[in-house]
Image 1 (cartoon, rainbow, N blue to C red):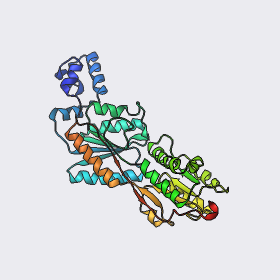
Image 2 (tube, helix red, strand yellow):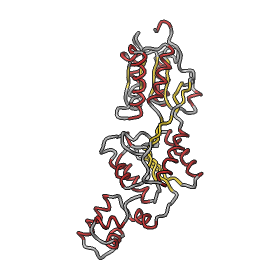
Image 3 (cartoon, helix red, strand yellow):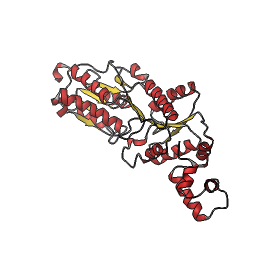
Length: 341
């Protein structure tokens, strides 16, 4: 999973015994030599536990699962599914929450490896696809640490498994066009968040191709949490208000139900609403919510299988998987009223 202690000794131009003494805080090494070796060990992500594992070459049958935010219910669902797949194959799973903090994500990766995890499943923080944002993943790859990203690799040649977002959001947009909607609003895009940006891209692609007039008047209310609620509600003060809304996840949709009702807007009579993801309440609320549903079970299964194959063959070419979503029409989407067209 990393370079050997012999290779580290060769890089440091010293003996394996000297490297071992330094890493295990043993005496008999000059301060300058000790500092040089520790610097190299840090550069390559070494710790005593990682070295011990490399020396004995024993698999621990333990995997690390690192998520950007455990406040996202989808990540808990993924954990249960991944843990089930792992348990069936004799693996245990360690879980850690990066709290949308890249520094904390790096610390968790280091801690997982110190606990001898055989590989890592990672929901990256903040969808940061810059070179600097992904450098720690590049380092893992260079050290041959098995890992799989849950979400796209951002153009890097990593193993990844992700839910197909662009095509799926296009299906929602096409559904609204087929119902007769042309004035459409998109709610909840997070600038810099690859998932919501891809969903927006899928919507705009379909509108530009199939209804250019709808693309030209597409409205957006971006931002986090409830920042967009006043703006969306204000749209309905005017005759050219959207007749349909596409929300970036079902949490955004749920937060809009009551505010729209409070300003006299009824779903789907006055505005249709479609969204992404699914939960038990999407069928229970009235009107029930039309959604594009990721296949979390298949993403979790394939992520585990991809990681297991990477553990078996560290030299194999990286592979990416895009898993289709399922469109479920419910009560929240319908045609606009004749006077709205």
